Image (cartoon, rainbow, N blue to C red; front, top):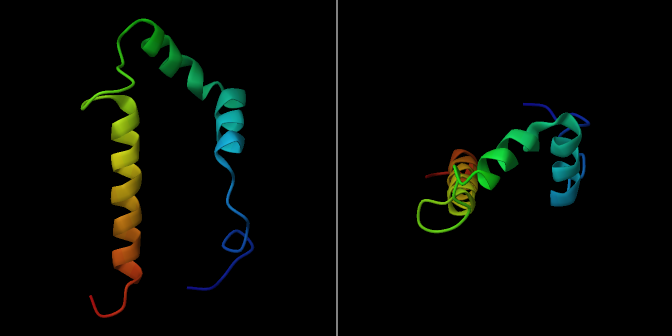
Length: 70
């Protein structure tokens, strides 16, 4: 694998990502569902814990792929 300009770019901050999703209209449907009570934000089966879990699992998976000798 070779390094590219994308590999060396500074990661976007959370607010930058939110701004891009908002501009693309990607947040509208999600917030409509939240406002209608169709999506829970917190609790054991809420959106926020599910997002954190997904991020941790992906991060661990990426780390395991790169960790030598495991």
